[in-house]
Every structure is written in structure tokens, then in C-alpha cells.
Image 1 (cartoon, rainbow over the protein chains, first blue to last red):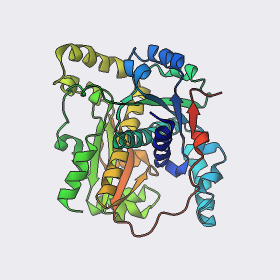
Image 2: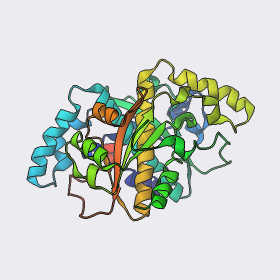
Image 3: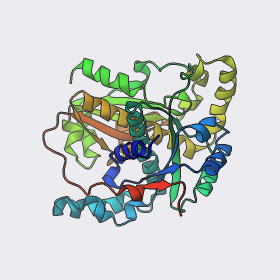
Image 4: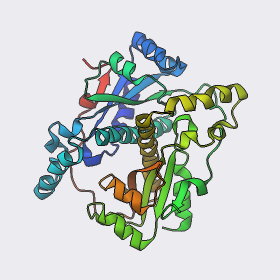
Length: 180
Length: 180
């Protein structure tokens, strides 16, 4: 993939919504061949980690909410800023599970956006979470307040996806109003 | 929105990828007016919860990986089934944080898919996590192994989105190879 295409892809990805506009995702684009090989070794040996055109490790800054948060709302009317900026603090502070949920949720949305954008550009993708999270953190030299969340591999399809088990029926996954 | 449109929207949503094809999302479509009012009351009073055309609560079955998992791979070649079905167990069993991460990740991807599908159908959307997770669980009568993850409200836009703080610059959120 060209630099221009990668730029286009990532420019779309960062339009993904995040709670309170905290934009807590970080997209690690791994191009170094030796590093990709090392990441593959801690990802069950899966070939696409090393061989796909592009390996993007979606990482989240668990503390993005606390890093100069007024900038996330700097263009909003003042009363909105006065209400929302302190609400950010209140939502996340001292709540590691809430911080981690947000990491996974934001990166999930960004990943889907990346995958659909890549598809529209003529590429195939593969989302992955089959890897050793601690070892990937080490290899990427992640700050201690960051976590990997998943990978998205992007490339030209060379064979069809394997048959799996089909979709669950709609009436199993769609619930009307509430569970019985 | 018509039943047909809602069906179209959800039919697209369930094409979202999930790890090991476990399809751990459950889409609670809340149409009961009294229930929507109650959910609004535990969602900081936000009007769209009650007033948008459609309120979808994205819920995850934290134990989907353990519910007859062979069906998720029933159409795959036998050696693939023999490898992957036990791998599902290994990935999730006894790991509540991993189960919860998957809930948020899968629902994040499905939410983005829902939002882009809705947009393509002429609707606007609003993803939300500003609500009391425990109280929403009670109101939806969720089984104890399910959790809400987020809402997506869908409807006709009646005013433009509020200005916020813009996007973070690409060179803050895109990292080459690894953190320095």
C-alpha cells in the first residue's frame, strides 16, 4: 500500500466517535520487518501479522480522559464546556474497569471503521485478538498507561475466507424491549 | 422507522466480525415507551434515549464462548474445528477481564457498523455510554452473565452536531512502529 493510501485510511479512522470526544485510540502502524516477525511470534504464529500489507495495532491510552481534557471540547459553547469537561473526570477517575471498557469500545468502533474504509479502497482485512497482550506491549514499548486492544491486518485478499458457522438467527440476537 | 428498515439495519449489524465468530452481541431494541422513559431517567436524562426513532441497547453475553461453541465453526473443515473450538475455551475460561474486553470490542465494532448502515439509510445516530450500567441491566432484566456495553440511538437529524474540539492531529494518534 502507498503512503497516500495509508494516510487516507488513517484519516478516516480518526473520524470514529469516542465517548466525550477523548479520542483514546492510538494506531501503531508496524512497518519494521524484524518487529513484525517478533509480534508474529507472540501471536500464535499467524502469518498475516508478518505478511499482510499493513499491520495496525490498535492501542488505547487509558488515561486520555485526563490529558488536557479541555482540548476535546475547546470549540463548544462555554456552558457546554463547563458541564462536560468536569463530567469527563467524574466518569473515569479511579475507575480502571471503566477506563478499560472505553479502550475496547473506542478501538472496536475505530477497527470497524478501518475495515470498512479499507474494503472501500479495494483491500481485505482481518481483525485479531489472538496475541499475548503483555508481550505486544513490551515489543511496542507502550507507556504503562496504554494497552493494546486488537490488531487489524490489511492487504489484498489471496484466497476466500474459510467457511465458519454462519450467523446466529436474528431472533437469538435481537431482543424486543427486554429479556424474558 | 419501519419494521423493514429496522430489520435491514440489524441484518447488517450481525455481519460484524467477532473473535472466534462467537457473535457475543445481543441487540435490545427498546420500543416500549414507559421503558424508554425509565432508561432515560438512569441515562443522565438525555432526551435522545426517549425521543429518537430507535433506541438500541448493545448488550453482550459474556459467556457466549461457552454456549455450544461448536456451532460457531460447524461449517469449517474438521481439522479447523478440532483446533479452534478448544482454543475458544482456552482463550476465555476463568478470565473475566478477557470476557469483558471481548464484550466491549465486539459491541464497539457492531455499533460502528450500525451507525454507518443507518447513515447510508438516511438516518443520524448517537453512540452513548453515559448511563448507569447496573440500573440498565435491571430495567432490561439482563441475565447475570450479560452486560450492557453502550447505546446507539437512531433517527432523523433535527439539528447539526455541536462543535467540539476537532480531531487530534494524526501525528499524535498514529505511531510508527513503536513508542519512543
